[in-house]
Image (cartoon, rainbow over all chains, first blue to last red):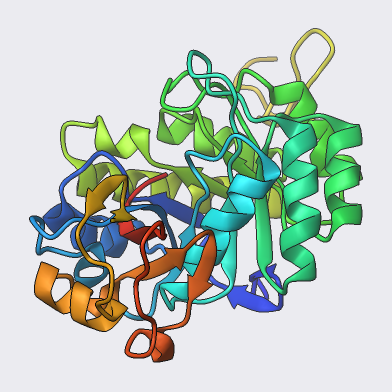
Length: 256
Length: 64
């Protein structure tokens, strides 16, 4: 296989596993990053306090690119404000836009997300918008200057897998940007299935944070994502409409 | 009074750099917004907090 790299906003990545860092302890992050082989890791921006002296940046290897999210934003303007603060924290121009106005299902607001993408792309950010998989919204995100599109598989933190499978496939087929499945992937097999469909990368957080052994699950996801990628590149075998098709020669049987 | 991360504090007249240091923040690990505009790190020493200012001090935490 030739060098198979993921290009986002002019940056080249060898890993197709984007790791979330939420809901697990700081001292597991280093091991999870290593076992995931991740080169991109998401972080959130929150009010600082002086009680907690530990900082997440001390636990993330220096060669890993930070992808700050805009969680907590309810409008494009709030997302832009959080993105600018994230950039000021001095770790680059990547931002994952996350705008929600619903706290039960945590579904992204596509219209506000498109607006935020436009604002931030103009300011030079490398914008990765988290979105509900809708073809028109994805096209608008491309027009707004997104560097990738991040459709959800199922609600955030649900571990329910590829509930939006058919709609993600449409984005894979029609959108000429990296498609990164984000939210809802609960098992390595689901990550593998999405990669077999031709998505470019997988983002996972809760699947690891709620696993019995977070670094081991990170390693399992890494292998599943690599397997799915290879399967996609190799071209999946066909599915028969009905009946069977022998794998063994149909001659030379030990009978007359 | 100056509103800092949602709390009224008696910090008017101090520079941002002095406030951060006295309160125990690691200035290299935070970003600061004053009245919804970013304060660049190089300006912390020359930025004087004023009555009625709304200051947000943020950092990175784990997130998805």
